[in-house]
Structure formats: structure tokens, C-alpha cells
Length: 115
Image 1 (cartoon, rainbow, N blue to C red):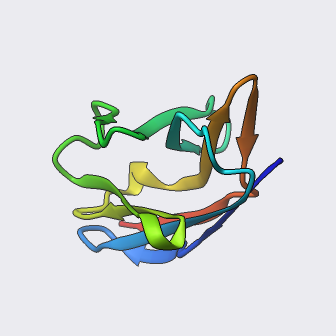
Image 2: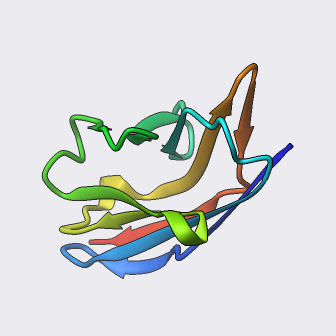
């Protein structure tokens, strides 16, 4: 079992910044990648950023150049630094991990960007 807990969401004005944290615990060895997803009301959940165990990153087109995913290995933390936030970034942000053969999700943290 893997447990993921997100934190750091909140209300911010457009142009501002937030940093989300995802703390992983449990059987975290053999996790192949950790991702951040988001879901806005009425929309499908979309991939925001991916960080693999070899350090490779990948970002959704809408956040490239504004968001950065990183990790702090010693504390099993994965961060999502979000800069230049836009109202369309509003949604619930979820941490996700894949440890074959299962997918694991956190409970989500709300990010609201006001115009």
C-alpha cells in the first residue's frame, strides 16, 4: 500500500504563486513515477506534471514554463511549484503514483485562482 497526502492548496490572485506538497508513505519502493493531476468542475481530470524515478519530467502544455515538479528524496516529498497562476488553473489537484500493478491517489487539495 502507498499513501499519498497533498497539502498547500488555497486561494491566490491571478499572477501569484503556490507550492503544493505530496507526502508519500507506505510501500514507496518501486514507485515508477509520481504525477500531479487536476480536475476543474465539469471537466475531466488532466495530467499536470510527471516526475519519474530517474528524474525525468513532463508537463501538460497549459502549464509548461509556469509549473515545476520536484522531489525531496530524504523526506519522500514531491512538490509542484506553480507560478504565474491563471484563473483556469483553478481545480482540485491530486497526487498520483504508480506502483505496479496499482495506481494510488491522494485526497486532493483545492486551488482557486481569482481574477
